[in-house]
Length: 307
Length: 153
Image (cartoon, rainbow over all chains, first blue to last red; front, side, top):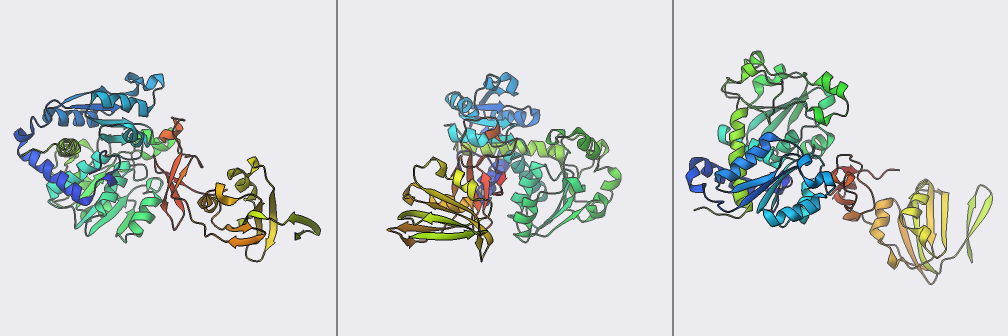
């Protein structure tokens, strides 16, 4: 595997399989791994707040016996003094063994990886990549569905700016017989590079619709997304589109018994809280799988083997 | 001996090149941009720019004739500036080769990333690096944020 993980494409299908096998083993035998990272330090460099992702990384390292340090927003880093990303990671390389970086500027973790002497994990760079979310999504699907192939996957909500959607599509096209249904308002459809350069070019079956109700009965998996305020330049557009697609109990009654609802979280109102108690709603379990796959990733990047 | 070009009844005379090169079949209107992008304005040698010359193939075209050895230029870069352009290399007054232009794999500090969310927009010291990701369509993407660059005027 590459030294740093910046994009989901940095991980091959085989490496992904090995990571998920390792995460499975960690889930089954957590005590075996409880001291695997004794004496190691993970730096969480969060130039933009993201409580869940940061805590997931920290929980992953702590459960491996390692320690963590870092900052939770650019205000508490020397970025406020004008320090470059390259200089920040050069310094952090002396203190930590591995780092996870979130940054509002797209490509910042790639700059970090080029200058760090320790592995860099991209924990989200603007609207660009968020590879550990993709790993989380894939590991959740494989764990709960038992497979990553032969399924119809629906994506609903903000498919234009939703980086988790783009990354998951790119990852799922590597598996046999995966069909896509895209449910979104006209303004938020998948970008051309996904439609033309990936789906059409690879001859992957997909359809684009505007009503969730029409397609729910056919889905094996529904990936809901939030219409994110920070991705809009214009408040008016955000207000107009944010409530476009809301999943509630009534809509869930149209779905199959074994359909699964995933969501990268945080949820605002696109999934009504009444859906949370439905066994098909797996978005909170997804968070747990996210921690285990991050544990597997940290171990792999630090080249620590546990017998 | 001089080469004669007719333009709207006037006659332009451009001296024959002994050693140098001619960039021909440039899309009409791009000649001046290419002249600047190649840094020809900083050369201490004869350069002739012919704009809107008539062309059977293109209707109108621009041409640039340069009287200096071509070695100091990266010819792949010519292909990036205008994929339709051709180059004739001249020595002792004769065309000695017509190298095939191809797109460079990487462009460093040639074009800028226009994505306001790209790290290069916040950290000016970073090189602007673009990688050729689709040679068939001539698509370049920013090395950092992967935003596509469209080579349009």
